[in-house]
Amino acid sequence: MEFWGVEVKPGVPHKVTFTEDRLIHISQAALGETKKGNENVVLFVNFNGKKLVVGTLSMDKCPQINCDLVFEKEFELSHNSKNGSVYFSGYKGFPGRPDLPSDGDDSDDSDSESDDEIPLVAN
Image 1 (cartoon, rainbow, N blue to C red):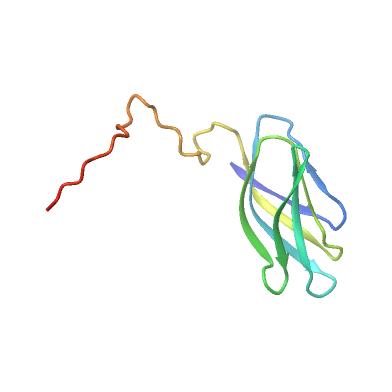
Image 2 (cartoon, one colour):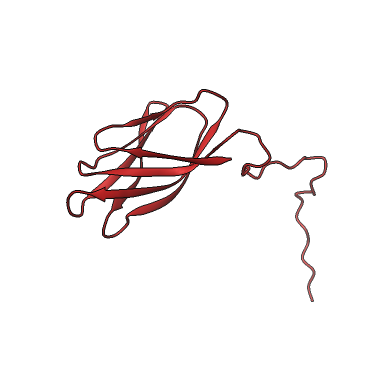
């Protein structure tokens, strides 16, 4: 794994492309310095042709948010601020590597315990 981060400037969507079999995990979004007062800044991700809201930032109430977004193919980040940049950060890595967090489904069914109910013993 290695650190990944990007500045998304006002009015300029940032397209993230992949040149090799990698993944990008976005774990935080934060407001940069703004030129004007408090505005609500809506964060967007465009993935598979769908523009989705990630969250809303505000310098006074919520200047940064934690998130848990993982992408294995091209996506685009944007926001609606006209006064300042938004910084996205996280890490990049390789799918299927043991040093990356897993989805928790690495168990081998032959070694797993039965899913049968265990009877309760009354005292």
